[in-house]
Amino acid sequence: MNQVLLITGGSRGIGAATALLAARQGYVVAVNYRQDVAAAGQVVASIQGSGGQARAIQADVSSESDVERMFREVGQQLGTPTALVNNAGILEQQTRVEHLDANRLRRIFETNVIGTFLCAREAVRCMSTRHGGQGGSIVNVSSRAAVLGSAGEYVDYAASKGAVDTLTVGLAHEVAGEGIRVNGVRPGLITTEMHASGGEPERVARLAPGVPMGRGGRPEEVARAILWLLLEEASYTTGAILDVSGGR
Image (cartoon, rainbow, N blue to C red; front, side, top):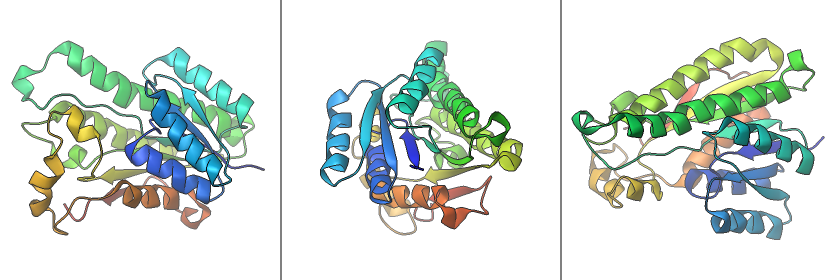
């Protein structure tokens, strides 16, 4: 049976690195994207060029109907998902809590929290032995911000990732007897395009001296942790959240 992995937000950064590594490990990969069809196409082309199987699937994870359609399309085009990486997430311009408004909070939480819940729900419906599935693995991509708080920058983003951590532990306990393992990773300062979304493309360089290892991380370093949690090597690991942060 093919091992089919769906990665949300798989067109760039940690998601793209995970897609490429997973394909090398033998997964059939569904690369979800919201807007950047060209970037998703490049990831798929790279996988296919190396002999792997992949498809790009558009969906906005904050939309329940999009999430349901995405899982249907994965099933129709690649097979029933056996693994999910909940990687899609957004942040907005750095600011203090006193300047936040409800619309921004809704945008952050609809993608980072509601979207992660919806994708996890659909994955359980596909994978759980309670629903006739064969089991599977879910990895939620959180952030060290959930622990550190991101004061003066992204407290709303940090809070959304705190919710993802709670989901990881609660869902892991809920489905442990149904053949599904649920784990998380908390990346630290990783060199990705996301920092530009917050208005500071060079944020990693500014903060790297405060990391015990003295540098920012690479997306590939997070991808390796995600793949370990997905694979059979982690067969007795569930409800765990692995920090990939250089000690910060």
